[in-house]
Image (cartoon, rainbow, N blue to C red; front, side, top):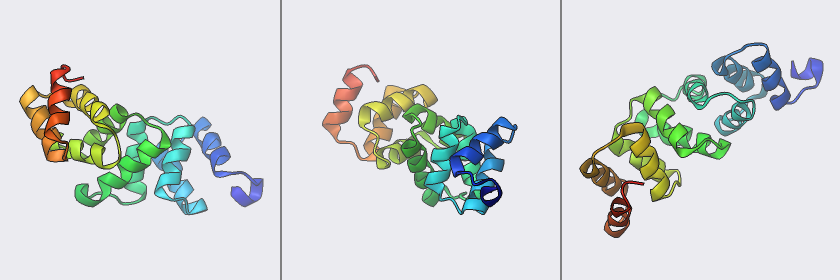
Length: 156
């Protein structure tokens, strides 16, 4: 399609989305036709208006990213860089990988979200008790004072 119609990745993505193709199908096309990277694919799919859950599933499938330990960080980072919000990323990762509260806190911290955003996302997606939240934030590497101040404010 690229050479026949001289179209960019973004134009092709929009055309395919408008034609009714799912994020996974478009992600496969981007990877095979354009040799598109994980980050670029996430960015282009987000720009086209695909929901974060579909994009996460597409990235997982297209790039064969099935290991929580090694792949979730890459997907979460790509989603963050594409402009999806922390709660959207958290929810999509949980849906696609079955992530625990502790692992999610660590992943979100490691991709660069601050404590307030991480806490807010965890509260929204997991609705943990104060004890569970404190433990997850501690395990993610946040300092005692930061966690205490956050909890004092009422879990975001």
